[in-house]
Image (tube, rainbow over all chains, first blue to last red; front, side, top):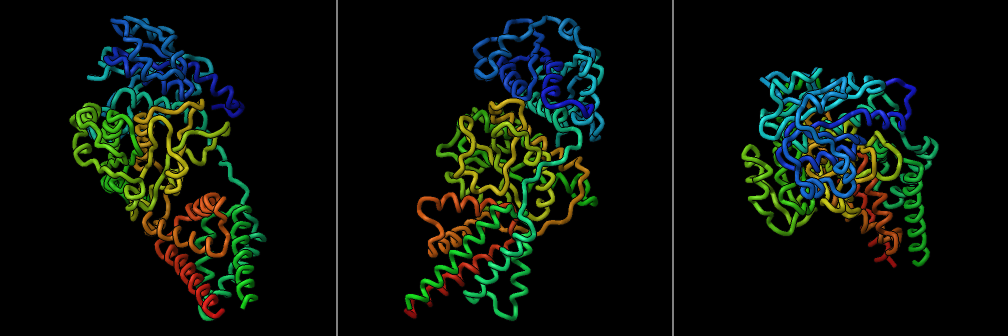
Length: 255
Length: 255
């Protein structure tokens, strides 16, 4: 995506994508598709089907949160009409043959698709539960996408929709190499103060013999070093050392 | 993953991952989870639930292709027992607040997790449909993962399982990140024993007031969880606790 797009604009671009379900048999799957489309910022849902689907069954799976997608559901009898507004149609197909082809995996396809959304409408087309898309259906598609799987059996329709909506959203929002947010970590100064404090405490209870204190402290530094301690956490550890040394003094005074 | 692993070996490593469903309400969701786990090469399915789920309802969604996962379903009554064999537990949580955090997204978490599978068992833990995981459940998790979404409403359980299984499979088979071999880590059983020991010691010195012991122990679990403690390191920490408690007894005896 062009670098200048902010998150708000990226979310707007997702309005240019529609989920199109070709002859879905179960209204529950239409409802589940609505719910996850909404979760992932996709607001157009289209079905191609002869009969009106049972509204109650759709709403049950959509939940009230995605009820507006069911209210706005577009219903066509012919695939060609349903796809008419879209300049890019991506057909979903199950894996054919043994070869694992990375080039029509969702990630690669969507990286190519998303820049088109700046000026185009795109559709993701899913076939019926029992057979997938036919060659006749696929002729309307400019590209196909295949969700990689470990075996040849097909995915559940609602789950396939969920995976592609997720991948679309991810690719839209994060596809550029963004630097990861890292919380503020303890400085070396804070860490060394903490290690001194820890060593003092361990010496007090005789855990560090003079022989092997280097060995033990190295072990302790080794695993605490792996954590990436935050300043607050280094203070908690020092708080514990402080409390321990105080407790020890009290016990000795009482003697 | 080390570059020398071929696809066959990578698929084998997925056997070291389990999907763990905490109190799933609907047997249909267990079945749907089985189906997509199988699609993505994951063969262990575990549930934590008081009652036996309805087998017919599970099988309907699993389809005959994933019936063997339902036959091999492991059923526990307590989460702690279910998680005992795993050295890495990844808890799934819904997005909190407005910030979009890339660092606990599935892709980033799994890139770190997969190299561990060479020598460790890992679990992906999902909460119940209506409320997700509690803080009590999350204390067993070394990391959390959040599926990025455009809004705050939660995902359907079966779809969340599908997205994470897909991401796990993708990252295993196609991620180009190469990482170093990771040694065997402490199991959850070893970790829980260690945390008990730590809590006993902190109680002894009055570091944990009854009011906020949960708060402090959560902080301690939080940063020790990030380390990826090895079995040997968990033993060092227990050795220290043991030594401290012994020292304390001696001082008291002398009084």
